[in-house]
Amino acid sequence: MSVVLFVDDEEHIRLAAAQAFELNDLEAELFENGLDALARIDEQLDAVVVTDVKMPSIGGLELLKSIRELDPDFPVILVSGHGDIPMAVDSMRIGAYDFIEKPFSQKHLIDTVKRAQDKRRLTLEVRSLKASLTGKSTLTGSLPGKSPAI
Image (cartoon, rainbow, N blue to C red):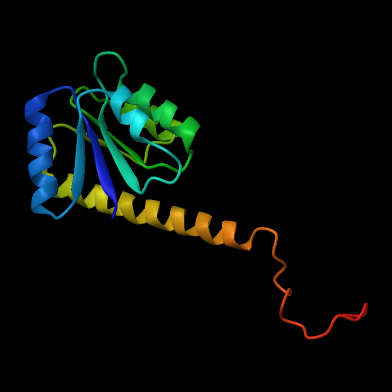
């Protein structure tokens, strides 16, 4: 099951998000800072990151860059109350899945997370299928016989 890694330094926002995820049957893990969330991420994790942009120690843009180094296909949704168009454009150029401005509706957040989860599942499925085909010819086992002509 896919999990939402929600990163925000403000406790009331983490709790509100946790409630929204729970009401929509989404599993969530809450993090006060980006470093703890980053430690949880690997290229096989079925998850989506939702992170605030402005945080102490490591901000959302730095977290996005670090995650992209680990897995360029990992969906990261940035959330900001201080966002502007250039920041949103920069985050998308870096590889953010989406950029949401605060205050946001719970429905908008949940819809965005669900789309990102679908993308992540497809990415992991494609990787798995590619790994299972690595080193196998598509004709191997399809043709009977072992003559040089075959």
